[in-house]
Every structure is written in C-alpha cells, then in structure tokens.
Length: 276
Image 1 (cartoon, rainbow, N blue to C red):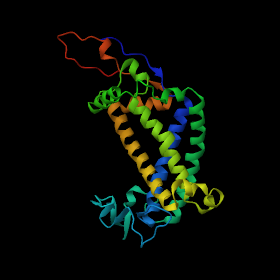
Image 2: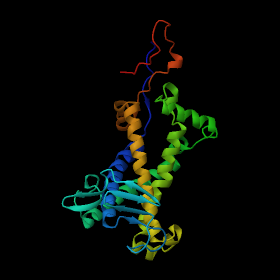
Image 3: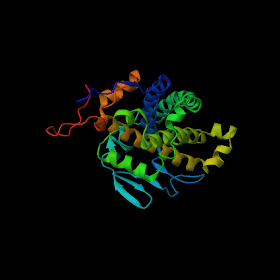
Image 4: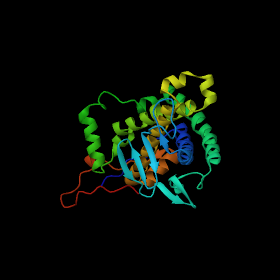
C-alpha cells in the first residue's frame, strides 16, 4: 500500500485559540443557563410572561411540554434531587444545587469570554483567508452534492486524501450557522433580556418582539449550540479523536489515504488502513 499523505497545516492559530476558548465558555454558559431556567421553567412569546400566561414550553415534574406535545422527562427534566424539585437535573447545571444568584454570576462572567474573543474571531474570519474556507460555493450548494455528503456521512465514510484538506458542505453550513446565526443570536437576545441594555438600546426589544420572545429565542439558539456540540463530538470520535484533537492543538492534520489512488491487489480485501 502507498504511503499515507503527509500532514498539512489545517487550523491556523486564531481558529485554534477561539475553538478552545469558545468550548469552555459555551459549556459553562449552557450549564449555568440551565440553572437559571430552573427559576422559572416556562417560555413565552411576546413582551409579557408570568405564571398566569400560557407558555409554549413548560417543564413540570417528570415531563416537558412543547406546544401541544408532552414528553417524558427521561431523568433530565422535572426531577427530584437534593431534597427539592428541579426543572433541569442538577447533574447538567452550574452550580449543581439550586442557586440562581450563583448561576447568574457564572453566566455573566463567561459571557465576556464568549463575546470578546468571538468578536475578534469574527473580524479575523471576515478579513482573512478563513472566510474563503467557510463560504459555500455554487458547486457546494448543488442538491446532488449536499445529498452525496449526507449519504457519505450516514455511511461513516469521511473525506480522505485531498478532499480532507477542504471543508465539505455540511461542515461549512454548520460552522456558518454557529458563527453567524447561533452565537450572535444568544448574545443579542441575552442583551435584550437586560433592562439596562433595553434602556440604552430600546431597538433590541423591537428586533426580537419583546423580552419574553427574546428569552425564548435565547433558549432555542442555546439548544442549537448544544445540538451542534453533540453532533460535533460524535463526528470527532467516529473520524478518529486522536488525529482530530491533535490537529486542533497543533494545527497539523494527518489525512487518511485516498483509496482511489491506492489500488489494492485482487487477493487482498478492500480495506483502507488508518495512518499510524
């Protein structure tokens, strides 16, 4: 079998720094945000929302209701722990006991770690080469190409050889959604929930249709980030965690051999060997 392709420089230093900083800040903000949700586990649309109003999402003991659909809590939603009821299991929150003031302090402290590096990374992306790496091309957006990438991922067939040096369309759409939709969404809606920010920037309330709508959109964007993280971690494990994590630390990525360019003798099984 031919030698494996040589490693190539895949992740520039600003991308690597932002990745790990963002990973820490998003995890802390998600977990502290879930503890904040424990204080009032109901979400509304519009400018107002209180116990007497009808929420579109409500967490009760053992159940979570989304619109007309009621689902079991599965040990995550509506549980008893530490001698009291929790909307979110405290195993998934910061702090791990009911503490609204403490969770808000964690949330606001790490918000700066999310916002400031995020603005710097966004500026670097728009100015530098990374913008070209992420921008989908016309060929990328062809339905046949999108379907091909979906089918390849469903079969756990990941890019090899030269193809591994470029983001595929699923990666591009995911990263663009996170950088330009979900992260700005959680930041702007977070600001909208602040009475002080509303006094200075009242247009935020108009933009999101009221503080309760902003709270709902904040939650939806946060759950979108959680879903992205879950899928991202699964893909890292399936694609080879050592190689993937090493590339995000050092920048250098070792692509798997391209089976197309490496013919296998007829007496050999058609198996692609992973590089050492």
